[in-house]
Length: 277
Image 1: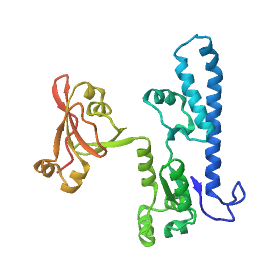
Image 2 (image 1 turned 120 degrees about the vertical axis):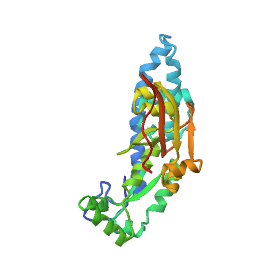
Image 3 (image 1 turned 90 degrees about the horizontal axis):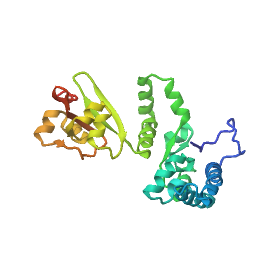
Image 4 (image 1 turned 135 degrees about the vertical axis):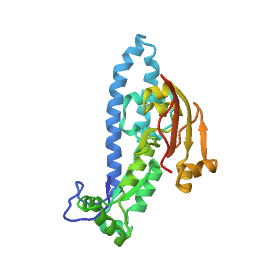
């Protein structure tokens, strides 16, 4: 979160407001922390490679030297090019600059409602140039006020001021940044939302509910959320040909409504019935 509001009563650690400078400081500190980790690993692995004790460490050292070069050039690791094998190794390091990021521009409530701020355009340009990741304007002041309001009061305030909370947008953007999606199942008395990694196949998605469903997976009957939202019920989706039967290689899409069929101990069973018609 980057401060972009002017407030004399809220002191700034650097003495004055300059969000671009603040971002550069944050980036520099993260890079220095990663460099500390990388240099420590290089010092540890180099003697092992030189002595031929563990040949597999040669690859690790090559990647570490590549990391060192990028970091010393002021680059964020997530913005560099890596192949699959390198990524597998990078994931073991948990480097700070390898993690996805979203940027929140913390505005005053007044500026957020007016959607005006002299730093927003400059911030967007800087982020696009350096990482290309999302920038979301937000007012922490306003969000804090919402916590002390009832849902009705919040809705009334947002309507009167033509504004809305950014919490939902922040959460969904964060989910997308780390490649998470949702799918839905429904019973007669509840609807459940399940979180999975983007690219998950149907059997593994079923396994999020119960391991037996993955082991005995037969098929997935799928309605895409956009179709259900438009047609409003299962019967209408089925009549319109919007209910699809998918096999083991189906890649679950964000918002899918799924009815799993699987083999259980006593024959074929289904996981849930569809949303009420």
